[in-house]
Each structure stands twice: as structure tokens, then as C-alpha cells.
Amino acid sequence: MGATTVTVISLNQVILRLGPAGAAHSQWMKRWSRLYADIFLQTSPTADDVRRWTEERVAIEEECIGELRALVFDCEDAAARAMSIPGRQHRILKLQRLFIHFGTFQQEFPLMPDQSPVSPPALPAE
Image 1: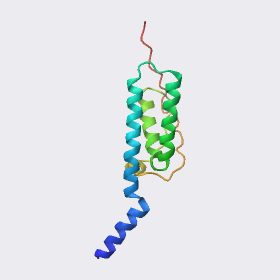
Image 2: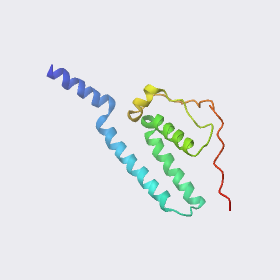
Image 3: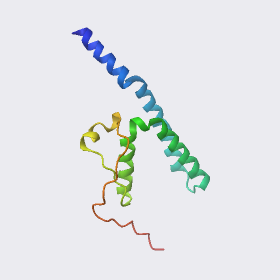
Image 4: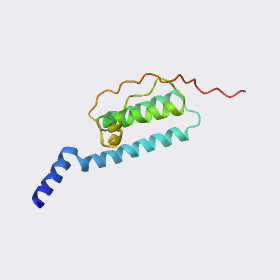
């Protein structure tokens, strides 16, 4: 029984890459945090700043897209809802949402049809 348990645990670590995945996730989080701080501290961004930030975001996503594809779409959906931007919600199944932080094999997440039109927030009067 003990040998079977050790074998199952070892296979899970090899197949799911638990050790290397944890280290990679830690590095991705550090890079996201540095990117966030850089964006947050820049009060008047230039076009070059935005380009550099976009390149860094894309570089991070290229490294972790297989693992975090559903999570990226879920975060974008939440940001679009908070900013009242219609037409940006992706279909993510309830079961997927339970395992969203462990990765996904799904390649595409189709957009959901708009449930109700949402107008963008009004600009403050000057």
C-alpha cells in the first residue's frame, strides 16, 4: 500500500509538474507584480511606456498561457464587467472555474452573447 501511494504521488508530480509549476508560478507572479507597480507608479504614461508594458504582459502570457489560459480570460472578463465594457465575456464552464488555477487544456474560449447592453460610464462634467 505504501509503495502504491508513493508511486501515485510520484506520477502526479511528474505528470502535473507540481514542483516546477510552483516555481514558475512564483516567477510569473513576481513579474506581474513588478509590471503592476511600474504601471501604477507612472502617472503620465507615454506611448513608449504602454508599448513596453504590453510587450512585458505578452511575454509573461506566452510563458504561462497553457497553464493560465482560462484564468487570463476570467480576469479580463472581470475587468470588463467592472469597467462596463460590453461584449467581452467568455464562456467558462462552472467545473472549469473550480480548477481554473491549475490550468486548462482548452484552446479557445468563445465569447458569450451580450445578455443586456451596457453603456460605458459617463465622463465627468468639466
